[in-house]
Length: 359
Ligand code: SOE
Image (cartoon, rainbow, N blue to C red; front, side, top):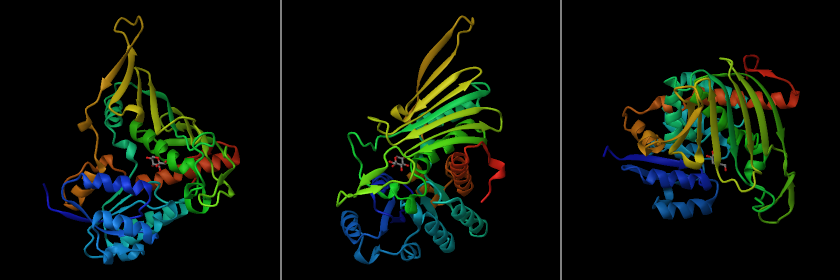
């Protein structure tokens, strides 16, 4: 086991608990400081992790500038992503941050510009790159097993519903905090994974966004609050190499858990991967005599995946990490640019060319 590293966590909401659990599984990773706006969350998680009271911060800058903190894991709502990135760059602190990079393209441009003069070791959690089947798929495509990719289908379905689950109004429905709705939340993963698996870059997009559930209950009072952000998005994409992609994502896919799946249609074969089982890839290819096709389920070993928490701890120790698999800031900026292209394609009802769009 390498030396112990001291980590500070910013944001103690739901997703943060997952990060804390995964860090707890990495030998030598020690959470020494916390930051959140909620005194109750600080007290609860601080007690659970035995973080001393003076290391329970309410200010982002205080935690980031604490010399006892070597690296930061940030899991905050979208409206503070830029502030965390800028403060970590200012302080020279390595950062593992949740996607999307920022709330808006303008913020992403500001962060990218500052990064040019204040670079830091950085990981952005486009987490679906890491699964064993998705790692297998990227290599499979790179090895030419599918031939030229003609088209792909990407969908990411969740059920925040209105029929059964009736999810109340959360920050992810509040435009001032989240920016876009399901597009930025799940669509950011879809955009990232499609370029990551194919090695191609999007060049033109057309899109439609929709708010299917127009109001949701205040979590305490039950009062209906209007929802302005999208909870469904579909977009079609032409890639620079001519491939075409069809994308759909929803928070109203009744009964769906966390269903992110990609099907790649190549001239020499088809490959399907899904979070429903990220240890399997389903490959269809022609029989040798050309009389038909064979569909084979390939089992992928867990070790083929990447553990981003181990990567971050390794990065803090100065070890060689699988950096190419971990998005860096340019990937995050590009993701934000493509999200903006989808929004503009929707509002203009037109095909948007990515090259014409800059912050
Ligand atoms: C939304 O429910 C969410 O938590 C996303 O924000 C995450 O990025 C995704 O990995 C799981 O679903």
